[in-house]
Structures are given as C-alpha cells and as structure tokens.
Length: 485
Image (cartoon, rainbow, N blue to C red; front, side):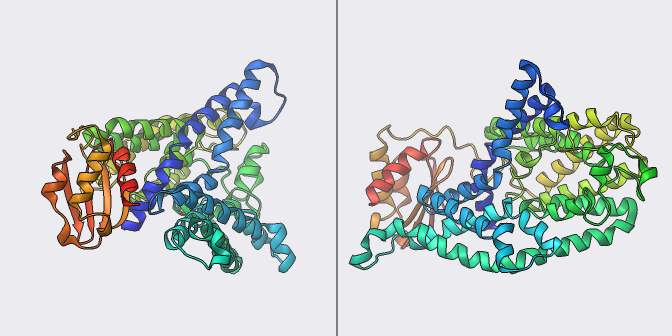
C-alpha cells in the first residue's frame, strides 16, 4: 500500500498537466465540430478550434510518456532528473522493440497479437518504464566502475543499466502481453450473450483496466468489428438496431451519465471531504478534471488523480460504471460517441437514427451525480481514503514560522539534530515535510531539531524521521542536501 501511495504521488505531476488538455479539447470541439465529425474546416473560428484540439491532444495522446517521466522523478530517492531521462530511455526502448513492425520480424502474429502490439504504447508501459528508470537510479546512482570506464560511473551508468533492464522487460512482455490481451478479448466474447448485464460487466472492466492500458482489448471487441459487433462503427454508419443483432449503442450509452454527471458528483465529494488547508488545491485539480469529463469525456485527469492514492475507491468507481451502464441499457437511452462520452458527442450523436430517448440524460445524469457523490463521500470518510486533499502530507502545515529565513542555518540545526551527515541515509521531501532515513535512531535529538522553529518531528519508524517545515521545505531540503555532500 505504501508503494502504491508513493506511486500515486509520483503521478500527480504529470496528472496536473492533463486538465488543461481536456478543457482545450472541449473548447476546440465546440468551436470546430469537424475536428471530431469530419468535413471541411472553414473560417478563423473553426481553425482556432482545430488548433485547440490538437494542443490538448498533444499531451493526452502522449500521456504514457508523461507518466514514465513523472514516475521516474517521483520514485527516485532524491527526485533527480537522471531518473526521468532513464525512464524516457526505457519507454523508447520498450515501445520500439515491441512495436508491431519489429515484433512481426521475429515471430508470426495472429490477429489478436497484432492488436495487442498495436496498443503497446499505453499508460501501463509508461508506468513500467518509470519504475525501471527510478529503481535503476536508486540502485546504481553511486556505482563506481574501473578507471578505464570511470566516465560511466555514478549517474551516467543509470541510463545504460535501464536500457539493459528494458530489453529484459521487453522479452518478457513479448510473450506475456499478447496472452493477457487475448484473455481479455476472450472475456469480451464470453459476456456478449449476457445482454444488459454483459454491457455492465464490460463497463466495469473497461474502467478497471484503464491504469494498465488493457481496456483497449475490450474496446476492440465491443466498439469495433473484432468479433462481428462494432457498436461504435455501426452507430455512426447511420444504422439502427434492426440492422444488427444487438441493441445498437448499448455498449456506449451508459458512459454518458457517468462521465458527464457522475464524475462531477464524485469530484464534489472529494472537495467536500478534503482537509480545510487543502480544499483550494483539491478544487484546482478535480474541478477542471470534472469540466473536461463533462464537455468531451476526457476522464484520465480525474481517474489518475486518485486511482493509486485510493485503489479501493477506484474499484468502487468502476462498479458504479457497471451499474449505470446496465440501468441505461435497460431503460432504453441510446447515444453514441466517436471520441468519448461527453456533451459534445451527445449533441452530435442525438440526430443519428440509432439514438433513442436522449432526453433521459437529464434524469439519468441527476441520478448519477447524486449516487456518485453519496457513494464517494461515504467511502472516503468511512475508510479514510487518501483522495486529493486528504493525503497524509496534506495537514495544516503550510503556515509554519521558521526560526529565521536563513535556510542554510535551519538546515544546519536539523542536520545536527539528526546526528550529522554520517547518520543520514537518504533525503526526500514532500509539500511540507523533510523526510529523512537515518542509520542510528538513538542519535536523533528532537529538541534540537525543534529549535529551528519547525512545527514538529514525526518518527514513523526506527529509521525514519519527518520534519514538518511548511511550504518552504524545498529551500531547506536543498540546503540540507548540500550540507550532506
């Protein structure tokens, strides 16, 4: 759990890039519908809209790379950029080695395997690359090589080691990835016969698999013509349920109330349960994410903002999707999307022949908003889940008054209080705390540390010391690291 929480915090930096992308794309689609629906792009308004969509898509489409870099830095012991560079090198190597074109040279690919490797550049691989980069950095940053290889000693050898590990990881994924992908395709085929319940099961797994990028396997089964379904392609081709063997749109419709109204409800619950000192931070993150979800169905800024901080809540979130997709299918609301289930797609799909009872988005949306809000608020409070604004570090530690504004002096006092640099094993910091790993806990003098004007000293374990410094912690941490060199 501690690993997942640190992983979640590492994702916050790249996740912070995503809300603006959703807003830009929403505005762009509104100004230039042709970007989504096809057709000529004429006039300055549509051209501006086109560029806004492309600007937002530049980061959304490369989200996995952002994750690789963010995790590389965030999981490194001292947040060094070398880990980010190594993570990027790992990402480039894995995705290149496992591209369909390269894999097909060394083995014969089935249709399912081709689909699998076509989708290899996904967030799951980005997370793997980030972990490879950070772990190699943590393990090998101080490596000493023989004199004739001394140029590659220390941090310079990290990218090289990451490359070797990435090759090994690619070999493993070469055999494992298509098996996992194929299993999910088989699962999709198995639940097709379950009608509305099957649509709900599909939606549950669709959300649940997003962190691993494996939702594409199920999407190919239900939205496209992998096994003869193609809910999305038939819907936008102007057909109706009479032209196919299922209720056309049933595998897309239920996403609309969840994305347009459910996510804003869940976001409001997060704001209401955030700690007072962090409500503004929570609003800044989840409000923009909720807008992105409502306008154009871009949900990643919201989902990646809490899935690793509170994985239990993410499972509940996926379950709510399953329930609402089943209900939506049963009541007969039908709409489709070409991009995602936001207001923009709902507007344009409402005129297609397969669209039915689109007015029901209002009662379904109100119900989704209320249910998501109530369930999220209850779960967050009941189980003390660490959603944005409720992390362990997010207490009211932002108004600490240090003994003086000489950060070097403050760092010296703290260093003396923890037993000197010889007793310091590692240095890290979060928003308000200096986090130290020490060798001998008996040498820690809390009274001395507090004389620097810090708010407090926390000792989670025998080798861990956390010093509450406040929002100026970065300056103190930088000086502390200099003193320990």
